[in-house]
Image (cartoon, rainbow, N blue to C red):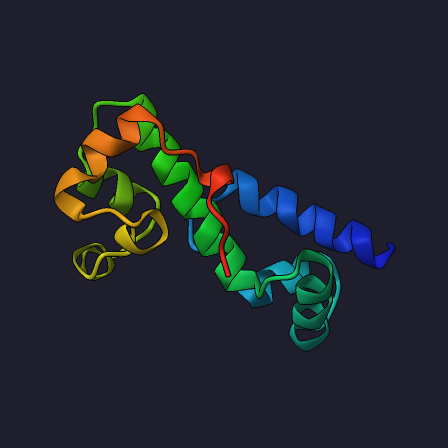
Length: 119
């Protein structure tokens, strides 16, 4: 398996299992690489550390769910694995530059994650 195939396989797994706990060790083992090498490879090809990428993908899915459903922000955040403590600290506020009280209203209007640049 080529390096890019290993990363592609792990990206597919991440997308399919965003609502579950995903460990770096499990991803590395699933493609037959050491965790150390896999982390370096992933970061080189994706330009983000594995757990940061997973967190951003979960955040993107949570924002989509906020835009497309009538669920409360707390329910969606917990569904995608964000602890209540992170929600109260403003996890969604920082990337979206919104106050938590207005997130649900603003998400239903015109916020698109693809328009936002992450550092």
